[in-house]
Image (cartoon, rainbow, N blue to C red):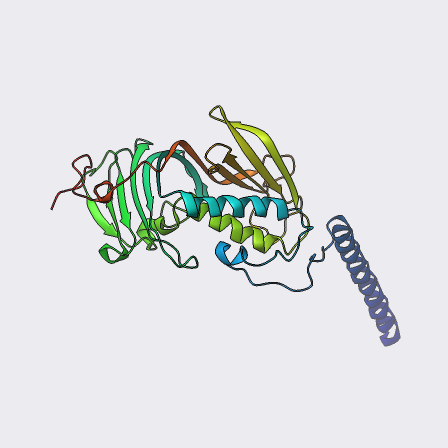
Length: 307
């Protein structure tokens, strides 16, 4: 009896071992299949280099000249330099849509005034003055925002607007939870110059990897104006890529960026990419001569309470 029981147990053990071995083989086969579809790609550079400011990047040769992003990065640096040297202020209507906290918000139309400060040190971020008035949607219509670097303890003045308590005013920390609740970026990073600086930084990070397709079109159009368009695409999803597809348009007349949009990968194969962020600068007018009054709560054209 004991011998028969031992043989049965031994037989069961062999069967279990066979099943486990088969499962392991199947798992390894699936893993190898996935790796063959999207194998790891070696970086085109041997060493990760330090990400620097656009100003510093202009003083050093690019480390990877044969990368697909090199021409687009060159163009972005040229336009960034032009803005810093030639644009003192501008007005426009910003059409903005962002994904915030995994939720894609509706389009916002905002009339804006921006004045750039001047600094002799090219490595120092120049001060900026910003006025915003929301035109849509209804929930935000009439909201006003005023921010001036190094004034009011670094806070932004916000008049609520909208359909409820439109008169309510509050000073907000631009990086605080309340100010960031409906935005991807703080107002301190607002503006076309900061947009380009952010894209240049991202490009430096991406230029250390492969799997990047870049197309540049010289005959794109926006609002009937001739533009140069750059499209960057990452075919395979990787942890170090921030987006699947990004597009930026430069107005050929003003040389300024007038549109930027970035999309992440679709949730399922066959679906369209999901929008992360989109900014279009319409009716852009540069060097209009904005003054301190344009960034004062005492301006009689604004709805802020007067002191």
